[in-house]
Image 1 (cartoon, rainbow, N blue to C red):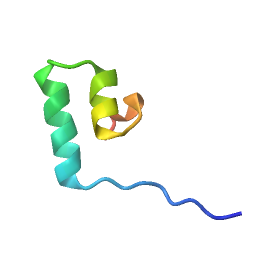
Image 2: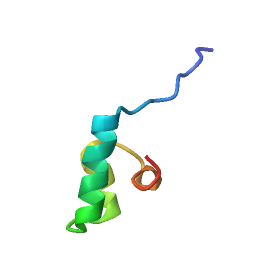
Image 3: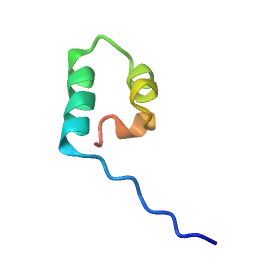
Image 4: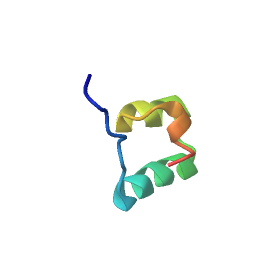
Length: 45
Protein backbone atom coordinates (compact mmCIF):
# COMPACT_ATOMS: atom_id res chain seq x y z
CA UNK A 1 0.00 0.00 0.00
CA UNK A 2 1.33 3.44 -0.96
CA UNK A 3 2.00 6.05 1.69
CA UNK A 4 -0.10 9.16 1.13
CA UNK A 5 1.51 12.54 1.72
CA UNK A 6 -0.54 15.31 3.24
CA UNK A 7 -1.35 18.26 1.02
CA UNK A 8 0.59 21.38 1.96
CA UNK A 9 -0.77 24.77 0.96
CA UNK A 10 1.40 27.79 0.25
CA UNK A 11 1.00 31.20 1.80
CA UNK A 12 -0.47 32.71 -1.37
CA UNK A 13 -3.18 30.04 -1.57
CA UNK A 14 -4.02 30.47 2.11
CA UNK A 15 -4.28 34.23 1.64
CA UNK A 16 -6.71 33.84 -1.27
CA UNK A 17 -8.95 31.52 0.75
CA UNK A 18 -8.77 33.77 3.82
CA UNK A 19 -9.70 36.87 1.83
CA UNK A 20 -12.74 35.13 0.38
CA UNK A 21 -13.80 34.00 3.86
CA UNK A 22 -13.36 37.48 5.36
CA UNK A 23 -15.36 39.15 2.60
CA UNK A 24 -18.44 37.25 3.74
CA UNK A 25 -19.99 37.21 0.27
CA UNK A 26 -19.96 33.40 -0.09
CA UNK A 27 -20.78 30.52 2.21
CA UNK A 28 -18.04 28.29 3.60
CA UNK A 29 -19.27 25.48 1.33
CA UNK A 30 -19.00 27.70 -1.75
CA UNK A 31 -15.47 28.78 -0.87
CA UNK A 32 -14.38 25.21 -0.17
CA UNK A 33 -15.81 24.00 -3.45
CA UNK A 34 -14.18 26.82 -5.40
CA UNK A 35 -10.72 26.11 -3.97
CA UNK A 36 -11.01 22.32 -3.76
CA UNK A 37 -10.64 21.98 0.02
CA UNK A 38 -12.83 20.53 2.76
CA UNK A 39 -15.17 23.09 4.40
CA UNK A 40 -13.47 22.49 7.78
CA UNK A 41 -10.22 23.68 6.24
CA UNK A 42 -11.51 27.08 5.20
CA UNK A 43 -11.00 28.47 8.69
CA UNK A 44 -8.04 26.31 9.66
CA UNK A 45 -5.77 26.96 6.69
